[in-house]
Each structure stands twice: as C-alpha cells, then as structure tokens.
Image (cartoon, rainbow, N blue to C red; front, side, top):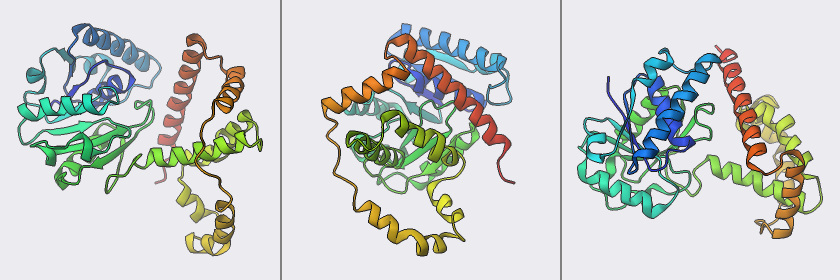
Length: 316
C-alpha cells in the first residue's frame, strides 16, 4: 500500500495522532526526526495508546492494533523517510522560520507527485510555502486537538496550490476517517480559529464586565450552545429554529444586529482579569500537571464517547 511519510521534530500529540490515523487507514507511515530518541519515544507512546484504544473498543480502522503498529516505523534520514511517499505531513512547532526551513529541505528532494502538507493552525500558506519549486503540491491540513477524537481537518491552499492537491488531500483525509473542509482561500486564523476567537472574545468581555462568572460562562457553552453544536452548526441551527433560513432572518436579523452593535472592542486580556479567571478555573481544575493531565484525559474520554455517539446517530 502507499506510504505517507510523516515528519517533524518533537513528536507531540498532533504528530502521534497523525501517525495513528494514517495507520488506521492501512497506510505505511515513516516518522522522521533529527533526534533518534524522539522517534523511539514516539513509537513507544503510540504502541501504548493503540493497545489502550483496542482494549477500550475505540481503535479506528479495520486492522488490529498490532497490524497498524506494524505499518509505523521511524527514520533518522530525511531523504530515506520521504522516498516513494505520496504525502508528507509536517508537525514541527508553530514557528514560521522553522517550518519554512523544513519545507525548503523537502522541496529539494521530493518529486512532482508527493503532497507537502503542514499541520499549522494559523500560519498562512503564502508565507509557509513562499519560493518553493513544488508550491502547487503544498497545502495546510490543520487538525483539531486531539485529532484522534475530533475528526475535523481544515484544508487551506496556497494561492498557487493545484486543485488536484486539494482533491487528493481531501480524499486521503476521508480515507483515514477524518472530516475535511475546504477553505477556499487563505485568511488569518483560517475558519475554526476565527470562530473560536470570536467566542473567546465575547466570553472574555462578559466575564471582565461582570455580566457572568467564569464558571457560569463555561456552562452556557457546555450545557447550552455546545450540546447542539456538537451535531449541527450555527447555520443549520438558524435554519431549524424557524421555517427555514429565510424565515429565520425575516424574524430575527434585526434583533441580532441590535445586539451585535453592543459588542465591545477586542479585549486586552489584562493581567488583572487573567488572574481572576485563572483563580476561578483553578477552583475547578488546579493548574498543577497532575490535575491538568487528569482533566485532559477525562476530556478525551468524553470526546471519544461523543465521537462514537455521532457515528451511531448519523442521519440516513
């Protein structure tokens, strides 16, 4: 089977998740890093995670954990890692110069068929891939943390990205069980973070201005908006909350515009408010490593169960 090579320095959650997802689709995966110990640690962690997923009935794909693990190997030589590959997924830290250096190295050794993909969450493709000879093969495939449980992947093209690059990446993401969305042109923050930052901005203002407590603000999302947004988006919510979209806009758009005009400026995230919100959050989850890790594990378990439920209730 074809083998996507997946590379990056410091195999964190995103990189390990990509490796596991590609293997779940039956693809051979090569992990590349300049430090052999990073590769060794990543392989050990992936083995533990896959075994746990299999035991809990949450392993993706039709292959067993051992079969998937047999598809993943490490390589300390970049040229060897990318030889014969169809897709390269970069996962180095969110540093423009570091990423540009990696892609410049790849640009010199790849052929005209491989896709060069970045996991960047906010760096624009026009800055990431500037000056590359293989720019038509370049794309950003931004996953959502944690990628193994949250399937969305934003596909963001460079202005010169070939349509075939977008199509092939979209098909690959579908093959490994992810949900790709096509961002038609690059924009700061892509789509997911623009929506996320809009929510964070208004949430911060509401807490800072004493409208609602930090904990109650989170409940508005987790026990309110978030419950329906886990299954339908804001536009379909509008469509269903009246007799279709036209009906909704006729009824509610003037009220929406009235409220929007009361929104304040971009928050400054003042130290005073940061410390106040942090104090409220620490009452629920103390910010020491043990408590944070335990809460993250609980979050991931919830996301795993939600993903299973979403698969069961998909409309026919």
